[in-house]
Figure (cartoon, rainbow, N blue to C red):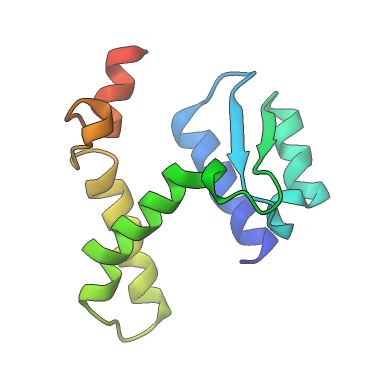
Length: 120
């Protein structure tokens, strides 16, 4: 993954969700997340950076579960003409289904968006 893509996604998340200062941002130790530019954005918004321990896959269990889910529910089920079509399908899956409608047992059967509204 390129640093500029990670930065674009971070900025999009900030614009769409307006997370509060002091929010914990957890990632793995990928070079894109360790980059000066990425870390600078986290500091500018008052986020607390948290990175998984070296060689500790359990730190990222939630995101690893998400990756398995998106692969099983979308990616392994079809193929696309080109990268642009795949990106559009993934964007739609995440923003049009996973966050707003897909129910999660760990959230009491609520979607992430419904759970967030309940605890906010």
